[in-house]
Length: 540
Image 1: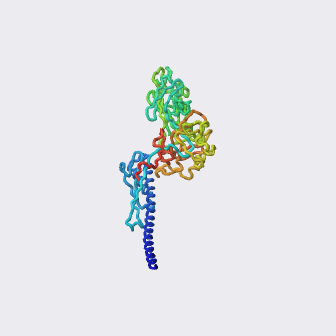
Image 2 (image 1 turned 30 degrees about the horizontal axis):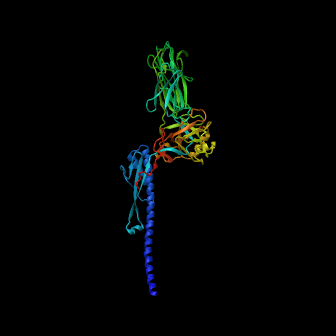
Image 3 (image 1 turned 45 degrees about the horizontal axis):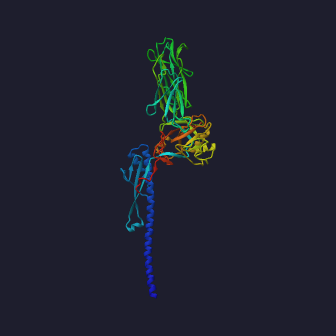
């Protein structure tokens, strides 16, 4: 019996030794597999960051070579411990790495060493990861800045004077043209209609009048004036532009006479160009309002006495650079007696340019197209609702407090929400142009310096100076609190702000977090591209 027990003891010892060896091998494999898992996870980070970075390059029109340089750079940048080195598979059509019209697919690999697995013949293990990023467009933004920018999306335009009107026709791009009858007279303005018909009172869209920009004058049959022309009739404040007035007379002046152009309190003596042609010029004024028109008088004078003057003053208009109308040109502005020549009206719509410096003032009350409008997010309504207060609120639990408006500007509000394309929001009542806006932006921006060129050179990193704001159209023609419909979103880099809430900054091509994305771009010249990771088309 004792012999049998001794033999069993030996068998147990052998079994324990075998199992101990197996457990050691399995433990070693677990250690190696854990290490390989961490390598795989870091490689996925490499692939994800590289695909998103390449997609951002794709969004701004980079070449395939530039895109792949960025992909490779970001893959290597993220090849940190436990990844020793990363290999990026070169792109090819329908390959493991690829560049499409709206996507970038990236495959990376790395040889990960085996520690204990070497005893089993596994010196290294090639680990791969793949990621795909696709371009999308924001259709929703999380807690945007409470400023809406009303724009013109014109469905119809009319030119009007004191005694006539005409429908304008689009001539492509931002240009519209029309013809007034030869009998048209007086100041010329244009009326535009947008495409917003939420309110049944505006079945043709909401109208908005701009002008006057020029004045049509009719000469008598006995006048000494043959013609007066102004090659430019609308000027942009701050651009240092010059107003030129060309005057043609029927006969030469006498030695004591002069042609004088009167602007404000100043008189400008016209310079002779030829026998009966004269030209006067002066600097266009700067303004703080969006639009201002000024009379321009033209007279023949002798020793400070008026010999003859135009039957009525001509006019020019000065606009801020953000005004939706860039120019209105009327030709001719002076009609000879009995003329049957129709009068052409040409309009150019302003198009905000990416990267160009603009000044936009934050105002409340009636929506001014060309300024930032202060928004009351408590009135937000989700389509098809738009009326306030009759229709259900989109966020009934949102606090209704003026102070929250400044918290949204600061970025410190403890209430989070989504604003969507198609939503309607009403403007804040009253003036919102006080120093509180500047103070709130100071909190938001903190100590980050204003350096737009440096920000662009650094590949547009995350910045507290970049804000997202709704692009809107008017739903009603009102002078008080105004409903605006969100038609898209824009990103804006703030360079400075003054105490009267005048914001200087630039609209930027900037990619955003993919809060809510659609593959279809909004029907607006403002879009925010949102590259985002997708699962479709990923092979492993």
